[in-house]
Image (cartoon, rainbow, N blue to C red; front, side, top):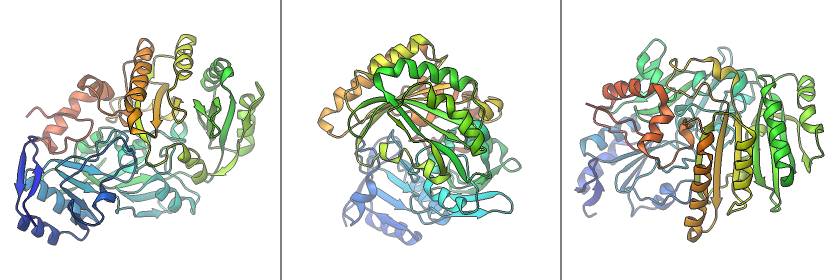
Length: 464
């Protein structure tokens, strides 16, 4: 094998001796893949086909020891480092050109302690992995809304899902983290150990280390009342105004998102997808106004096992599409904002694209901004412009439409952003996502990663 060309952390190129790579292989139980190896092409691909990067080395970790070995190898050789969990990573931060990819996607174990109502989940697991193991006990973790999402990125960015209004954000339900830090050390972060790191990991993203496992609090959730209701697109104004008023008085057991989307048949529609996590009979009464205020095209609300609810949107986010997303929080879902949403959605450049309106509040808003790194506690309506298309040659047109849409929403924006929806953004936008917690996060970054070893993320740059 010839010397391996790699990228080092100051973004300069260097050559790595083959014997150095061979020695690294011997420290790993998992795979070490180079560009010439079988399986490399599959291992380097991520869900978003718009991202096409080629790391020089892929370390497919099987456990904590492998992660420690990969971190130490990368640090000793000055390599650029990307860390990948088990899910989507729309912004492409979990992959790099020329450096090393520390891949946790083989680390998917979930251990449920039904007696203590806790679950220990490895960092490469997906929501579907967790649901499969917890549901047999009639329990659930408040996670996201798509079963293929990785628990790692979701949790570290806050985590908003179907149970958010009743049980809070995903990060609010973490009891402890197991972490490999930039110096290759294994530490536990909890309310009683490394409390500053515990605070930072609950919303601070991937800035502070490789989280090899999460310990979650479980809740007694088994069957929910959920599904989708669709109306013709020409009713969008009426539906969105009703949705706004309906959600303002909804009980916390109900989480409901509205969407401007296309049906699988290509018909433009407006819809609401909702999950009620309380008594089913009571939920029927809660959802009744939404189902009866007009005549829908589709009404698919029904009692569902929670894992089925968690996978209802999987088909809307298939592997292999081109993706470019933008998001913001609104000060309020005003009539004027609704008009801008509808006008721009009606000019969409791809029928695979959807515009989501997410209503938060509830339990997540009762946690103070200073209690965790996640700062967007007072927001209510989040907007996600989820642009998808199939042909790479059309990318400029779809990306420009998305940017124009996001710009049109700026007069209504609160100036805050959801970390997990960000892609390649300016420093100002990243800082706004962390809000008033940014300076404290810089202090903790200085302590745990003063050289910015973990920089391929929505980065908090150290000042040391």
